[in-house]
Each structure stands twice: as structure tokens, then as C-alpha cells.
Length: 317
Image (tube, rainbow, N blue to C red; front, side, top):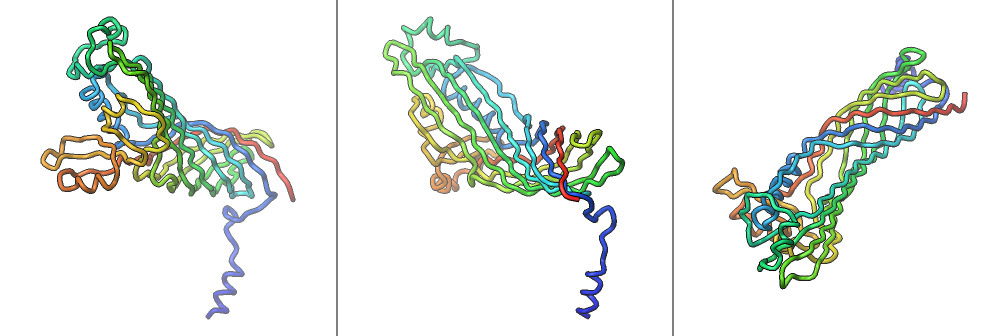
């Protein structure tokens, strides 16, 4: 029986559309596109931050705009032996945000009208509580790296099309800088705090399923259109690399420390009331009898699309 199986295996010939043939081709690609995801927890976090800063820090009323994706850039290097491509892809998700001259005044937490830092400076002599202006900057960078195998036969002399799969890892962080100038007769000295918000664990698996169409009008150059679906999820986020102090930051978030996680809590008796909290896992477990909660997650499942320029160099026979 074993001899029969070995004979059949050794005699099996893959179909022409699956059998590697022709010379090895070295390939490089540079591409740009868009990466979409739901980000339910992250968008809810932004809304809760808006509510928290408006009510407890006395800042300007403002509306946050939820995000569901961002531009993405990719670089790929690999080899092709028709109809198979084997490549390593390095992708970059990056975006920067900046808010300047954001006023806060703990004397008037229930304000309905819009004010400015200029308004606060005009009444600086009468301020008796924590008040001033914030300059905030944030930059996040995530770097998915995947090894990809794709099947893309030549359907004509200038057209290839097929599909593929990628398996890899995703890591990154968001870096935040918060600078505050305090106003009033007895105002404190300006202060500054910086920190990063990182996934925990830092490295997470990512899967990519995609289809691609490649136009090859020239021997060494082509254009590829690629789209597909990505599966990846970050289980929680943790505060790292905290430097400096900020009175308004501590007042808004109850003195967060290095290693604290971001949590979303729901009061057990009012499931529709969502609260944001930054604290340790030990503290969260101690409060579990009063609240149901879970860590803020990064749900980055979603579709992606990209346009790539392809460069090829053949070698061998």
C-alpha cells in the first residue's frame, strides 16, 4: 500500500496553472492606498474623552470625529516563478494630530458657550481655580509586516491576475505630548507631559487575504491593483514612557501611572452608561463587583485597497 502511495505521489504532475515554470524573477513594489477598519472601541474612547474633558476639565465643548481608516503605504520585496509570487511586505499606518490653544477652566465645567484662550486671558485677574490653555500633539505609527504567497498566472502577454494570503505581525504606538500654560494671579508654572500608548502585547498576529490584477506593458515595469480583507485585533492598550507631569492631565484622568491600561466600563445597573478609565489591571479586578468593563481594544479587521508600481529583474534560465 505504501509503495502504491509513493508511486502515485512521485508520478503526480501539478496542473499547468499551478506548476512553477520559467526563470526566477526578482520583484520590488512600492504602493499606496487606504486601510479601512471599524475601530468601535477606539471611536468610543474618543467620544468618552470628549465627555470627560468637557465635564471634569472645563474645556471648550467640541465634537470629535470618529475615524474608520487611514492612508497606508507598502513596500514589497520578493521573487516570482510563474505563476507563484513569494514576497515580504512592510506596511506603514501613520497619522498626526495637533490641537493648539485649547482652553480649560475648572471653575465653569458646565459651560455651553464657546470660549477661547483670548477670553481667558482677558479675565485672568479674576480666575481663582485651575485654568489655562493646552497645546496637544499626537502621532501614531503602526507597522504590519507580512510574508505573502500569491498565485498570479499570466493570462495574456501583458495581464496577470490571481489571489494570495499573507501572515505576519502588527506593532506600533501612539505618542502624545501635552503642554499646559496656567492662567490667573496664583497660576502654577507651565508644565509638560509626554507618553506613549502601546498595544499590550506589543506584537500581534495579522492575516491578509487579497486579490490582485497586474498590468505588465513593459518587460521590467508594471502596475498592480490589489484589494482584500485584513484580520487583526489588539487586545488592550497600556500607558508607557511617561515623562513629566501635568496638573490638568492628572485632574482629568485621576493620576494615571506608567503601566496603566485603558478601560471602558459600564455601570451594572445602567448598561447604557459607558465610562472611560485609566488604571491598573489589579484595580480593575478589585472593582469588578460594581462594574462590568473590558480593556480598550484595537479592532483593525477591515478591507484595504492599494495601487502598486512593480519592478522586475530576471535571472537564470
